Amino acid sequence: MTAATHSKHCPCGGLPKGAIYEQCCGRFHSGAHYGQAPTPEALMRSRYSAYVLRLRDYLNDTWHSSTRPIELMPFDADEKWLGLEIREALPVEADATEGFVEFIARSKPAGGGAAERMHERSRFVKEAGRWLYVDGEFPKRLSWPPRAGFRAPSTI
Ligand SMILES: [Zn+2]
Image (cartoon, rainbow, N blue to C red; front, side, top):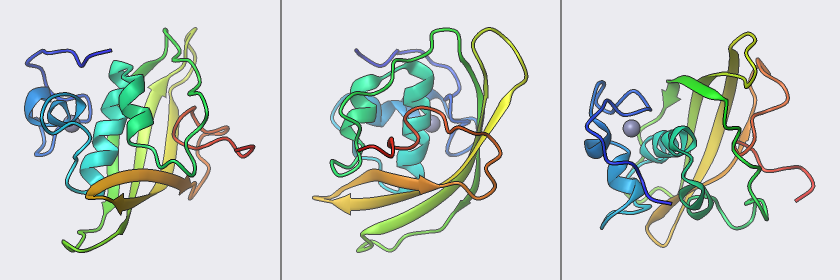
């Protein structure tokens, strides 16, 4: 699966705000910088955008091997992602190997119904020069159960 090439605002909202896809998460979804988001926040954003664009390989490749599901849950074709809000992303030092990002992702479930809010504080580690998603905790459990893929199944 390849990333769509379209000059639209990035699904993540853009970093900086309003940045187009190619200049934001698109840089990490394909091409020379594949999987090389420079900060935990950039990786978190690129993973959110990968959910929106259904980039299964990217989600797998940016998930730490210790918590990655054997197989990602299938994407829900009718689910609509409504937006991402970064609540807190602390700056990381150049030599940091761990980072955290707190965010809220909103989605509209398949078949209609009220929008859902997914509130997570994700943990990332840096290995071999790349940031990887490890796991997350749920500060307020605004939406439960968590959406597939933002959290490894507890059976793994
Ligand atoms: Zn983006």
